[in-house]
Amino acid sequence: MSTDILTQLQTTYDQLLTQFFSTVSYLSQRHPLVAPEPDPSDPYTNPPAQIQQTPNPDGGAAQTSSSGGGLLPGPEDTDRSVYPLRPAAPNVFASAQRELAEDLVTKAQQIEFLISRLPGIGRGEEEQAREIQQLVEKVRQMEVRRKEKRKEMRECVRRLDSVVLGMAQSVDYEEDVNASHPNRAATGG
Image (tube, rainbow, N blue to C red):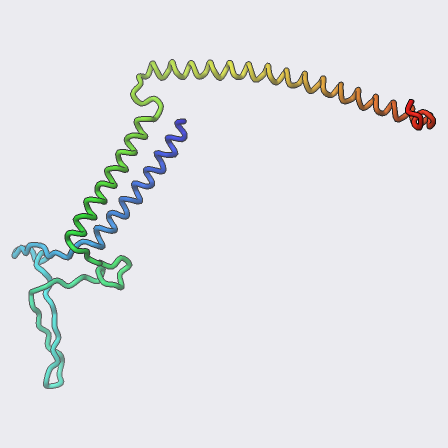
């Protein structure tokens, strides 16, 4: 029984890890694009500037200008990325977050339940030692019984062999007698 519980526990842990991966993947790919609050002292929290190139009317190099509004996705968020960013609507994303969190909690509760069913949980060391001694005694009794049944089986096989050999000798004797006296075989006696 404990092996069955351990197998279930391993399967449930595997499922939990898969759920963690799926949850993190969903959250990282489907979160809405929200600019961080700008902090004038930190250049990394300011939204990136949009760079626009305008052709130079003189035919020279293009002029660049930047405007400080809007968000541009980084290279990791484009469709060429392995996991492109596809933002979901905020209410859909919030609902999915709640559902994913509930699924993780449910799976964790299943793991706790399986752990509580493991043998030895909630019992003292002395009680476990007594149970082990009882099981050892049961195994000894079963071994004695198995040996007795094995002896009984050998005796049955020996008796069956003697019966089969006796019948084989009897059949051989009748065939020999019938072969030496053809008239007996024809008359039946």
